[in-house]
Length: 377
Image 1: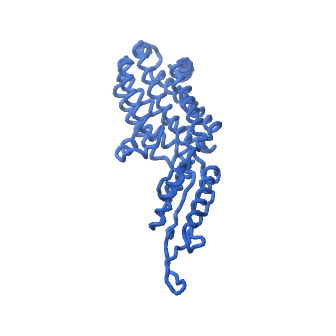
Image 2: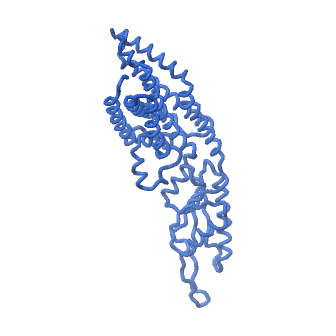
Image 3: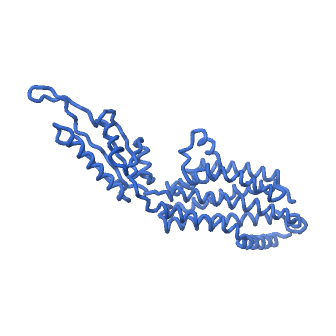
């Protein structure tokens, strides 16, 4: 077959493959409709979530007064959700929208000196400042919490005798990226959807072609079966890109998802790479399985652990250290983490090269397995 005829044949196969995919209602539901509904529901739930104040406390003092002050914050205001942390972690929490206010208790908070009063030496508490930072781009909860904090410190001053004002609050807004839960969830959901297209649509689609004898009949035609496989793979790559654009676009337009214009290209490149890797996993399953009854449990065994352990719905930081280490090597973890860094931190592809390398290694492994076990009937 000449080159031109091969190109024309491939174009025909590709168009036919696209039509087959769009006519498959089950595939369309799980690849497009289900992620849109899921994102929309969670986006609406967390868009205006502000029923409590999330306060990060950085206690740089070791005095009894500092400890008492922090305990007062926890006991006096039930709406305060206090978390002890470091300055770097507090800044990161504020930046990602995980805290409304950062309270920094200075190192000299509660320190005492000795003064001569009426011929007697008496202890005196040194003036100290509590620094509070809130998100300047989203000041509502932060300013309200800072006001409550100022009232608490004013009450403390009234209780301390002999000192006109030993505790003050310096509250200010700081520039952050104003990230919300949707900024965490959406990249994970996009990665999950790409995985579903790659594993389920490929595995079940090609097992069906095997059981119906379609692949065997293709071998009897002048057309090389590899062209058919290539057209099917290209269709799913394009679907992964369309799906990524659709979900990210909905997030940006309706739920405040942060994705800079210059980050779109890197975002789509990751979607293409992730789709290729998960398609190879799907081909490996399809090559081994003789029918759909064999393919289904294997596909679920691969997908479900990654769905819940790769940080799709909640951070892996809450996992035990051993589980964090193990799940860090899952292909969906690499994809979801890379998508988040590009979206949330405007990272370049070079900045996420570790995740790219992890995906590439999985692609090579899955590709070798697929070649080894794939059969046409």
